[in-house]
Amino acid sequence: MQSRRKLRFRLIVTFTLFGFGLSALFAVASLYVRAKVENQLINQSLEADVQQALENKHLHPEQPLQSKLVEGWLWNDRTVYQAPLSWQGLAPGVYDMHGGTDGRPQHYKLAVARKYGLDAFLTYDISREGLGKRQLVTSLVGAVVLFTLLSLAVGYWLSRRVMRPVTDLAQRLRAFRSGRQLEPLAPHFAEDEVGELAAALDDYAQRQSALIERDREFNADVSHELRTPLAVIASTTELLVATPDLPEKLQTRLQRIERAVRQATELTQALLLLSRAEKSGPVDGETTDVVKVVEEVVDTNRPNLGRKPIALRTEIEAPVTVEAPSSVVAVALGNLVGNACKYTLEGEIVVRVQPGRVRVEDTGPGIKAEEAEHLFERGVRGEGETVKGAGLGLAIVRRLCELYGWRVTLAPRAERGAVATLDFGTVSVAED
Image (cartoon, rainbow, N blue to C red):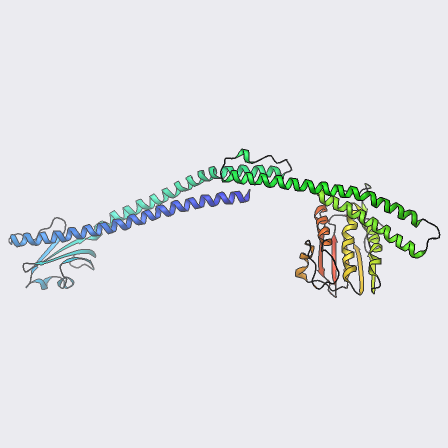
């Protein structure tokens, strides 16, 4: 809604500014043309008038110098010195003069004619045109304001008509965003640009729906097909572990297989939830004990340390429970602890269960603070790593956190290494 209003606002402002600019340009052009034409007409009239007055004086010396429109003076070659000093050296023509004397206006036009030994001067008061010019300017300003308001009204009306198809398209898309099934958009619009956009959206929606449906079917099929072999491996391993007089080394290996099967089952369930974008509660109908999951994850990852001089331990500061399947919590914590085990060469790894969160601290090579957020992207791995990996583990953790409203962060440790924090947000703290 905000973007649509901004677009409509821009259309109204653009149309209003266009109307204002066009009317203002017309007003300025009108003033310029009026001044130009008026000046030419006055000059031509004065020049013709002074020539005619001089001819009449020559033909009828007894008559005074006469003019129809202006005031005039006449001197001959011997008495021209009596004329104002600024007039005496002027050649025949019309001049703009300023600074009147002897009662003459401050701004006037002076027409000069010299012929038959006579010097004729006619003056025209320019100030008498000021009132008309002010009236014209006032009228033009009023016209500019009127046309601007008219442009605003027309722009508002046109913007509603222009934006109506876009608004309709946006409303139909909002209905799809609210969870309703998207109906074909193109039949509701004309064959114009909006209609082409609606047709493109229809095509894109069909392809996306088909892709999502294939993805869901594939994940459901894979999860279903994996459950049977995993169940067979789990039951067989359980029977073998229960065999009496089993060598200790073989029993250890069978336990590793048992943990791997459980981890694969949890990962399959978590990936199925991600593919469906469905948030599910604990499978047993109860809350998940985070401490119990942490202990299982630590036991599962302990063999991955091999012979590296690393101490892997847990510190329980506050028992925590969450409304989520234990498999989801196990996958999220398993990736965080697994990364710490892979990239730490020596020192210690501490898994701290604190109120509402779990922190995994290690003494590995550490990370740069500015690169921490990029490590949660698919296929992105930190620099300087020697351990093989696809860079998917942290991406899976981030997606699980987005699904359940949790928060996961990575940051460099103050002393050495890195610290990963899984914050469950609003959770229940179990009583001792």
